[in-house]
Length: 350
Image 1 (cartoon, rainbow, N blue to C red):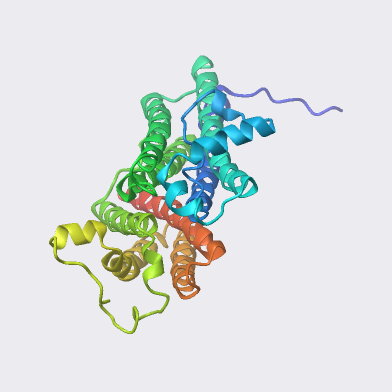
Image 2: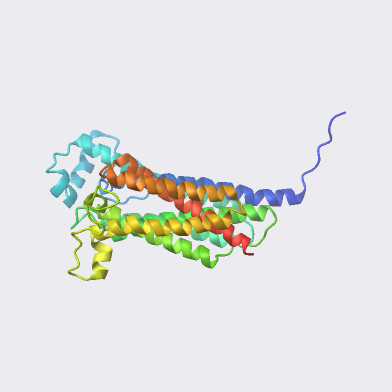
């Protein structure tokens, strides 16, 4: 006797829709993670200023002939980075192609993320599969992704006329926006997974969760400033900086606020020691969520533990590029795991 097929119930279809959207958001979050990693490589290889124009559509294609490559190289030769650094160092066309590659890949990934978000969103909207209350959030994430593209060009343009590198303030905005998008994607996907399990209320933000995120954002800001100012190079010793706990060389002449936002010695010092404040908050978060999800607690511990070790190793190797890229990659994982923990905390308080 053939087994009789049980017809699918409407409730099954309703549960599947949020799961499908959540899986899609996790996929986009993974692309954003790759984008952050490639962004780190682009910065560390000094590739970010190699493409001197913003062409959102036609720029998707790289130079296809030797004449095209020479034309792009000539444009690069007009900016201060080449005139003061790359040119005197003897950059060749082959060298230029190498840095151009990373900036082009970085921008191409941005376009890919836009398509990977916009088209499925349109599909889910046409199919009326987006649960109530989530349409606005998804559109906001799409708009923020588009804004991120504009922020990227705003950052690059700061290094094309008077500077030999990009503004560290604009770099910080660019990086923090990318990590905010990553966190927003993960949080929304977690809400949708809960909706599929019958919990219709999104997780709320608790006081502890907000405090943990605030402390982490400060550390990410210090990290972005450290990267933008090449402050990692001012000391290759740990735990002391050039034989001192508080390093010499901090320029206080323009006041505390100016030093806090611009001095590489002070920012390096703050970045390496504020990290332990972050660790304290993350340990507390992990202990709180352990009763709900042991996996989340382990993920948080593994992320910040690896990040601390990578940070120390990066400093002590004089900013080895492989370790520095891993440091930025694991930083994104710290953000994702922290969002997971804060989300669990918000669910447990309901």
